[in-house]
Amino acid sequence: MASKGLVAGRLALVTGAGSGIGRAACQVLSREGATVVAADKNYDAALETIKKHIALASGYSDAGEHSAMEVDVSEPKSVQNLLQAILAEYKVPPKIVVNSAGVTRDNWLLKLSQEDYDSVMNVNLKGTFLIMQTFAKAMTESSIQGSIINISSIVGKYGNIGQTNYSASKAGVVAMTQSAAKELGKFNIRVNAIMPGFIDTPIIKTVPDKVKEQLLKLVPLGRLGDPTEIAEVITFLSSDKSSFINGASIDVTGGY
Image (cartoon, rainbow, N blue to C red; front, side, top):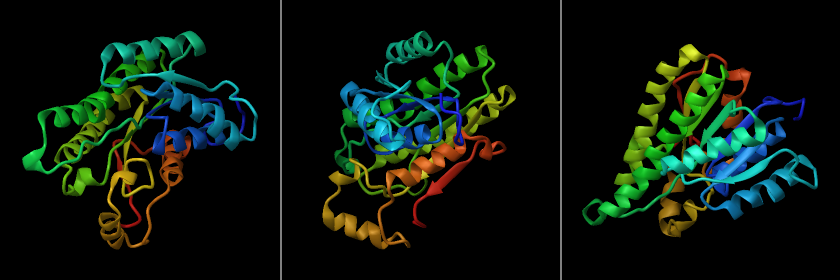
């Protein structure tokens, strides 16, 4: 493991690592010295994160000690299998856990299907819960002082047209983060949330240009955020620089 950087020598798990904020988190955490497990439902995308994006960010031609793993965060057995795979490879649970897996199934409230409601809740809220519960338990059993970072969204605070399911799931992530922080603090495990605004990720690509123009008018900085700008905050919350930040929800929105 690398010896320099904000999170040098720490093992980090990132879910949703195949694209967007998750992929950027893998890049920045590895740059700052962490060994990264990139986990995603799409294994090939996670592998691409490790082989192309991390290797390029670190200036090395190979992935080193980093690894890609498959996980469906909404399935308890899949989450357990992920933990066992990490323990088999690294002998210890991760000190850093980043819950970045997320989906959208947007529609008007009056047209939203129960299936689309459930799928968003299962990944964004239940998935965050399952990863937190499983890996916090492993941390406590190994007496590891860790940091869990949950990716919420600014729409969890303000809501958004066409996103009743998504905004509810992301508001739930904030409340769950605050409760988990209160419970896990005695084990020296910190739990915080980040509430990104409009970030240039695959999810934003589905937004029509006219709607995007309207959204940008609401952002004082006048632009979309870059996934790396979220990843820098993730890395800060993973490090000792944020040692007294616990149960917080940090807006990273350009002022929206």
